[in-house]
Amino acid sequence: MKIAFGNDHAGFDAPEPFYKPALVEHLEELGHEVLDCGSFDPEPVDYPDSAKAVANAILDGKVDRGILLCGTGIGISIAANRFPGIRAAVCTTPFMAQVTREHNDANILCIGRRVLTLDECKELIDIWLSEDFNGAERHQRRIDKIE
Image 1 (tube, one colour):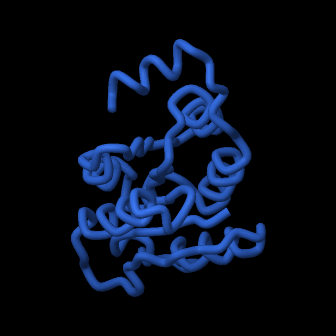
Image 2 (image 1 turned 180 degrees about the vertical axis):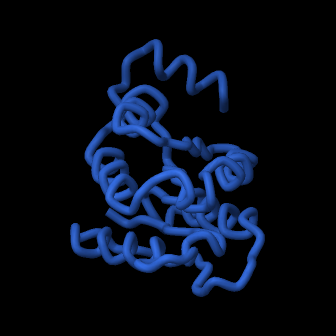
């Protein structure tokens, strides 16, 4: 699967290991192709820029899904959801990661460096990438209303 990954400077928050490179490496080890949309170091950046880059990669058909990382996942999800056709979901539990795909067909997973451990981020990513939209009429009807 092709996945766009974007983050703000929280992806490089101390202490090491830095989440951003560790999560990109995790995705590649799972066999996914990663489009790295930045940021690339701990210098402060504005999360809407990363959200826009990942959203556009999805909307332009360059990738299948996206993952965004900021301090909490909240700000970057708000920015991503400004784009029609994007359904970005903040997840903090395995159940959230599962149902956001099954019920909401989320195309961007948003996670927070300052609220999750690195292992928790990896677990959420693994679950989210393994789930498909279940296509139930009630779920599709609700998604259609969003669009």
